Amino acid sequence: PFDVLVIGGGPAGAAAAIYAARKGIRTGVVAERFGGQVLDTMGIENFISVSHTEGPKLAAQLEQHVRDYEVDIMNLQTASALIPGEAGGLHEVKLASGASLKAKTIILSTGARWRQMGAPGEDMYRNKGVAYCPHCDGPLYKGKRTAVIGGGNSGVEAAIDLAGIVAHVTLIEYDAQLRADAVLQAKLRSLPNVTIITSALTTEVLGDGEKVKGLQYKDRATEELHRVDLEGIFVQIGLVPNTEWLQGPLSLSGRGEIEIDSHGATNLPGVFAAGDVTTVPYKQIIVAMGEGTKAALSAFDYLIRS
Ligand code: FAD
Figure 1 (cartoon, rainbow, N blue to C red):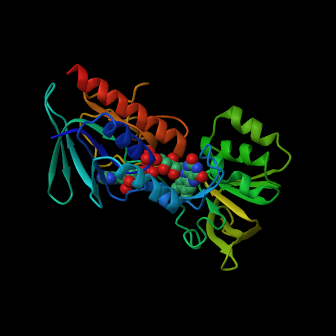
Figure 2 (cartoon, rainbow, N blue to C red; figure 1 turned 90 degrees about the vertical axis):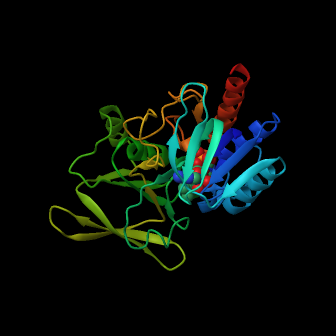
Figure 3 (tube, rainbow, N blue to C red; figure 1 turned 90 degrees about the horizontal axis):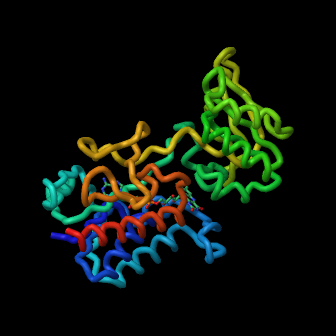
């Protein structure tokens, strides 16, 4: 059996694997797609001490760093079930391939995915004007016109954040009213360069083949179509944790995130979790790496005590 079995090969899983392997204990990583969301990212400018890098490059470096150690990397493998061990016993992870792995400790780092609008053009212009992370890509739109899709807390926070950087923000909400906290809505309404449009369904991302040039939305009250000219669209309609396979005794939050304490421990002894899949706030590469580190050191601490 593994001492530490990491499920997920994004920044959190890679950090966890390296920290575990450096303790000289038997470490494995199961990943559907090694690199995780980083593979889908273009420019990365907030990975501290690296002024600029690109997603596929950072993902390759993550994998190389893990391969510097004796880690059993099982790439292109999907975990389909976690069967926690009885007190102090081995945990089992079943894979979609039918295989099953046993480990003394498990680190869950299966990440999350941004919910997409599903509008034509969204995929085509991803990273070419369609963005999902204002902390990451906001500065790229300095002085430009942008829209935020979604009037929940994350959408309104993103609009307030962007309004300080970009020329103008159009916030588009599907419902008749915003769903964000009143204090956020009041702040948003106080800003001079923000337009709020409610009861609106984004029907298309418009572009010139290279970059986003605008969007089209339908006024749900009148059914009329409107066009907004802009350079950037931030989609903020939810971040979905990859926990569908983790039903059962593991504690999840109302949003489906794995509940962890300050040490990355879940409610199940010997099962830890890290990164975007957990309740940790602020989903960022550098945060996920720190969390993976914490989970691995906590797993090691658990092993030497049991
Ligand atoms: P993930 O990166 O999501 O990795 C999850 C891993 O688990 C993957 O290997 C996946 O294949 C695997 N997995 C999932 N389910 C299973 C399963 N059932 N079995 C086995 N494996 C599974 N952050 C920044 O800091 N700066 C940026 O500039 C930036 N830009 C971004 C741009 C885009 C387009 C996106 C989508 C995100 C961006 N982020 C950025 C956010 C950042 O990528 C994430 O916060 C970070 O990757 C989270 O790391 P993670 O390891 O927790 O999860």
